[in-house]
Amino acid sequence: MWEPGDEESPLVEVHRIALSDRDASAVLRTCVSESLNGQVDHLPPGPDADLRTALFGAHLGGTAIVRHLIGVEVVAAADLETVIETIAPALRQTLIGPANPR
Image (cartoon, rainbow, N blue to C red; front, side):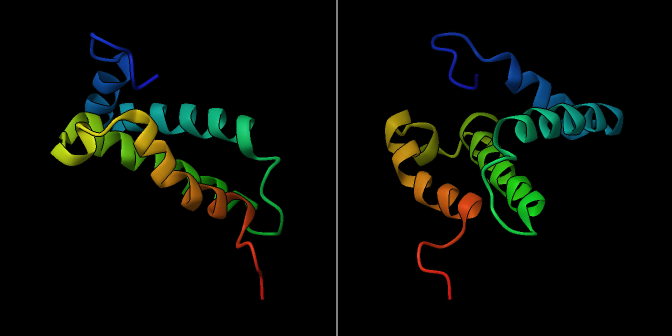
């Protein structure tokens, strides 16, 4: 949804508003939490699943903000597949935990 093609995604404007308005932030927070939890809350094992689901969303949201709102050149210019391949291992570990738990 952040990568619309030639036009700017509506999510960019929604996030701009939410980052500067408390009420809009609360609405966006609810929407993101419900959407994210509905899609991945069944994946994380363990008692801290809610925290790891939220941190997963924070990682995605931070990447989107840096790429699309702030426009950090190296991230904004990177091919989407490269961005995905780079952050996927960290996202996977956040959701399902380390490959070799102690």
